[in-house]
Image (cartoon, rainbow, N blue to C red; front, side):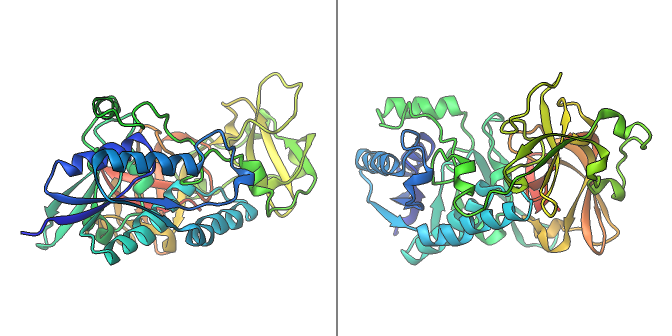
Length: 391
């Protein structure tokens, strides 16, 4: 019987290296494929994870494992689907998540389709997450996206936009391992990637200086930094989990005082502390809002500033995504879940409320720096069942 073919996305890191090795020990024909998605070295700090070094490491791993290897250039697709989208989002005052977009648009779309065209039955990655299969109440197969066994490395959040069709064709060989175990396997095999640090840069690009990256296209524009004082909120009701609380407070320049200047409100995001270049305050300043139209950055003193916290958020109807289609809730229906609005955030108790226009998420506790353009993902137990772009 012919072996099933798996094409592994070899990134040049330890996780995908071990994923490939584990598959060679199973009944698969394994092929390694490195994706080159970026050429512009001007915005990449070359001593931090350059693509050429990663490609070479991936090749050495493939040679060690005795599997076929090749490189594919997906830079055109990456620019169109990720980079251009990022610029557009920042220009509109939203903060995108390139890693989630990269998985949705590149790894599990362009790469997956390429792999299938090469005769692959599956693709595999080095993500710390798991997959299993159930038969739902309608007798249909449903693929479940499960958190990785290593709670500190769980990457299910980054895969929150995957579909049933994509999960059906994907394997996660290291999802049931701890990171320490993965490194130990790599050491025993004497893989070149065994001690390599995890990449901290944009997906497939490397360590990127984000301000420089954005300034490649977004123009600088001088504007005011206005501090909103604590007592601005003293006569306002405490935040509650209501639909009105899913909306940001609208600030006006007269609500505070000008404390500095900036080079463009679109370069800043809610919760940001660094890059303001304003001193002389008793507590550090944090960005609490940006006004792109008026080019104003609003800030507040301290990480406990009331402007940094909300109890609810909104996902418009077109941005709602269910990994488990059979769990989709209709307008008027509520669902108790646990949710997170950023990677590695502990899961938060929350309630989904479906309305005709949108899905609202009400948290039990106040949430820090809910940011438009980022993703919220919701879970039932350890299973990620859906996600959406925060409005």
